[in-house]
Length: 149
Image 1 (tube, one colour):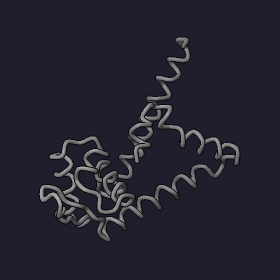
Image 2: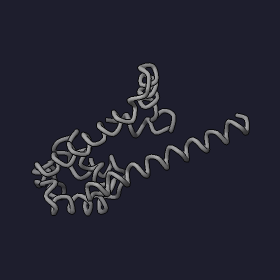
Image 3: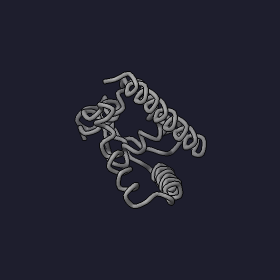
């Protein structure tokens, strides 16, 4: 790889990370949740009644850290938990209405923002955007983490 291409990739990666960071911060500020909390709620929406260990594995967090994160969401009314009958050291988590509502609101706000911001794009540009977004895990080399579901 030539130096110019390396410089372009470094700059592009920084721009992507910066963009995601600021987007994440704006969502977090609007809804009073941090990124880990939002991700945990999103994960539970897609994996109802997941166990603590599944969420900790998905988020690559120690169980203790995941437990603290999830207990805060339980305390705030976003989740409920039930003890696992087979393993009393573990429990299943479930999105409560408050959790469903905040995730739906975040998804709607994100959809509206993106829809508004791509209004000037041609159909070919929108198709290209979706194709790149669908392969982004390959570009960044995190396919094993993203595709294990």
